[in-house]
Amino acid sequence: MRTILFILQKEFLQIFRNRGMLPIIFVLPFIQLVILSYAATFDVSQVPFHLQDRDRSVTSRRFAEKFTASGYFNLTGTSSSDLQSQSELVRRNADLVLVIPVGFERDLVTTGHAQVQLMINAEDGFSAGVVQTYASEIVTAFNRGELKRLIPGGEVTAAGEISMVPSSWYNPELKYTHYMVPGIIVILVTLIGLFLSGMNVVREREIGTIDQINVTPIKRYQFITGKLLPLWIIGIGELSVGLVIARLLFHVPMLGSYALVYLVAGIYLLVVLGMGLLISTVTETQQQAMFIAWFFMVIFTLLSGLFTSIESMPEWAQRMTMLNPVRHFVDIMRRVMLKGSGIAEIASPLLILTAFAALMLALAVNRYRKVSE
Amino acid sequence: MGEPVIQTDKLTRRFGDFVAVDALTFAVGRGEIFGFLGANGAGKTTAIRMLTGLLTPSTGSASVAGFDLYTESEKVKRNIGYMSQRFSLYDDLTVKENIRFFAGIYGLSDTAIKEKSAKLLKKLDLQHAANARLRSLPLGWKQKLAFSVAILHEPKIVFLDEPTGGVDPVTRRRFWDMIYEASERGITVFVTTHYMDEAEYCDRISIMVDGRVAALDTPEALKRQYRAESMNEVFLHLARAKPEAG
Image (cartoon, rainbow over all chains, first blue to last red; front, top):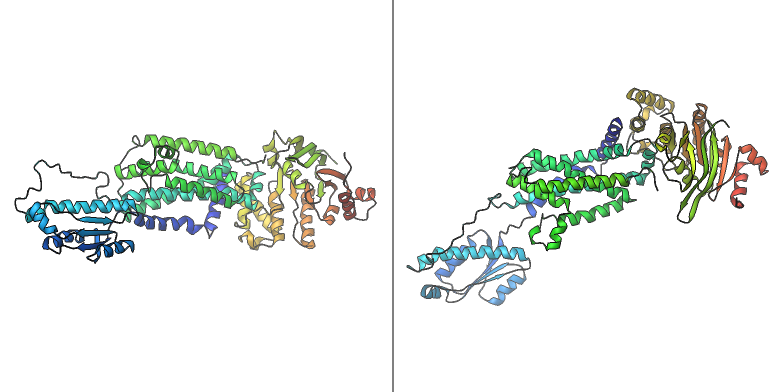
């Protein structure tokens, strides 16, 4: 036990003396958290919007106003020719063009039907879908309200119409940050844990001090505990600051218990640190370790369900994500924070993480040898 | 030579087809200063890494400090000290912190650590630099400190792998004064070097050529045997004329 304390003390001294690493550990992650959480949003607003009103009637103006007044769209220009509208799309001055043809008002009043054209920039298919949804909502609202007023007695809403009233549970305001922040905290904890542990032992090998340690009667478990415990503590610290920022800056709710989050994080960090240590024992230089850590970090992030939904991945990819510890922790964090899930509800991902932790530590301890073969 | 504290029997290490150390057999007595000489690549470092338990031998056997290298490696480790050619204390820790750390993992008590630190700093005349980061010290001081730390836990044997590389002759001479002092206290010193003046300071020396011991005796006896004026001549004679098989 005393031996471990001596290593612990040395590790902390070294971490806090490393001027280059300190900001990377204690400042950058939180800047990233703030920037990413604000930036990584699928919310679509202020879409540049171009209007081609050929009807120039009272009704067409009213209809177009529904778009500009919705808050989603930002009128950037008007024109009267298709050619110009299209060039606005090409030049990215507009992502949505609304074309109201001649005879819009007349058709509506006489037949109750009229057509408009929406041209949506679909380079980014996801945003285009959102724009289309917003636009159809506006059209539907116009049908319901304005049309009735416009054509007295017009049977626009059939008696048996099924109307859908959406209600979003667990994130009622559909705040994107509520969804993203818990996941990004996981990424930051992973990043710090994996890199610090990945570089640690290999660094001692590079500078030669590992030999000096290996000729001492130190036990393997003492060495590994002394090496990983400081990083574990730093990881828990990062998580705490992340949770404070989530609460105070992003007002992300915490419906579950903090104790549960810390329990899971404690186990999760063992997975990450064990993996970093494993990387450290199979590499010869810090550069190699860094490269391998990056490789895993990218795969883990992309397959975590943080930015893309796991349900929309192909079957085989979905199965692969089960092997991804980041995926499970992101999942648990969201469930505990936004849904208030308890330990029973998250038992299965938690068990998987526990199994990973045991496996990683066993592999790492086994790989770390005081004597070279 | 008194009772042997290091005894090897046909200790061999291969890396693939290359035989780095070939059937090394020798004994080192208690309190001896044993010089381990050889050209670069002759196998000195490989041999020392095997004897300190950092590298597994391919074949052969050895006992170090009375314990078997294979079966009692942890007991071996408690009884040896090691200072490598690569400077091996922590550059980003202070002098005091380095002493404390290594004393700590050898299991010295807090009072022992305090006492030994104070004594050591005084002996090395490093009190003024006790709280200075190691990186700010001159190489000669670092080497002395590394040696002192390597014998802080009073090992039976200390292995020094080219301990005085890169420093001037005066600093080297002072370093050897410390080696003599340790030897007088009964610590066996196993030292590799390629400075031939240092070879003269040893009680006995072995000269390795291509993984084998080409000669092993006192410096005087070796000079007589090869009718040489200095150890330098002995060394050149042996290293140039590769030994015959066996």
